[in-house]
Length: 256
Image (cartoon, rainbow, N blue to C red; front, side, top):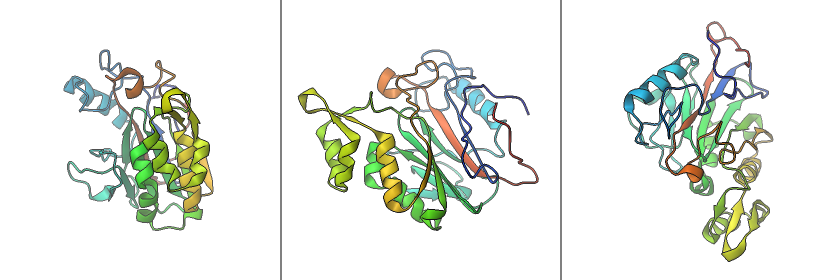
């Protein structure tokens, strides 16, 4: 197996033995600027041939073809094993070894989930709208395991020093949970800086997930490594992948 670019992310978390996971960055692909170079999204006006080649590059490091979603910033969760075409959803789960749950990102937070016993994995796309509407909670419900038996990994997203939002965003969270106030810092003109990582940790903890890894890698502040829609407006898409390992054919891979 060839080595992938060294700045791709392989989660280091307590479920590595039975859950494979990988998060791409913007490096290692074939797309020209402003999508340079590993853009995986077809819906951002990049050359379709370049995107197809980029997906082929990533596919070499996965046990099967990723189950791509048409993400709509909602809360719909689907079983990845049953995806056969375009489906509007923002999260998927699988209980079948080798099926690759996938979400694309360019500031929104990817939340990867796996149970400690190796029975189910999931990936959720958590922008502020989906997060406030309950995409994490809906994903946990679909996995049908005790939340205390789950481990979560928070991938790269827009960081708390960059994510400026209006009062309606703060209200959407604080009305549900007053503790969410701690995730917002006031700015002039009634604006706020929002901490997506903290908000996701709060939602996971409230749901009963006690082991939460990752978080803190900011897409907007690192243009060399990450795409960011908020920063660039015209931007490519990265992706987060998770799957159950088949121990006979998918051993734990080294972290390059």
